[in-house]
Amino acid sequence: MPDTEPFTESQLAYLATQRLGRLATIRPDGSPQNSPVGFRVNTRLGTIDIGGMNMTASKKFRNVRLNDRVSLVIDDIASANPWRVRACEIRGRAEALEDPEFPAIGGPIIRIHPTRIVSWGL
Image 1: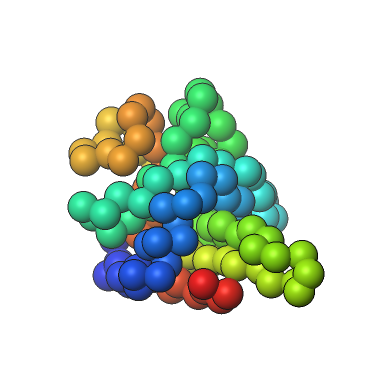
Image 2: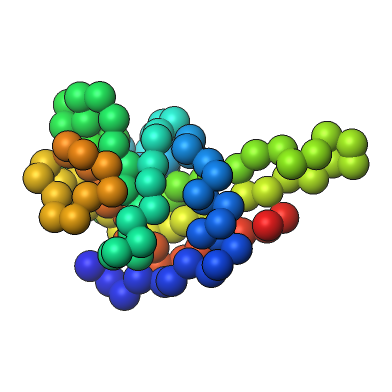
């Protein structure tokens, strides 16, 4: 896996308050697939671990096995008036792991090794 970009303290604080993100993977035909996912920051490894029901049977899991490039967006609306959004986009390389070492979530996971982290409104 490539070198992992570290999270900032403000990014870690924000991610600790969120549980749902949108994972973009690349389908075999090269088109994107976007899926809502539950996630946890794996502070031990500096990664994002994504789990879920029947993970190994999911398209996102199969997509990552074929092409490890992914993007995960976590966002929310902090205020509607005045308008203020918060977000963190995590780009990187992912692994589809059936029996991960040091998981932040039990069972098979997709583990993202961040190569670029962009955040705003935090």
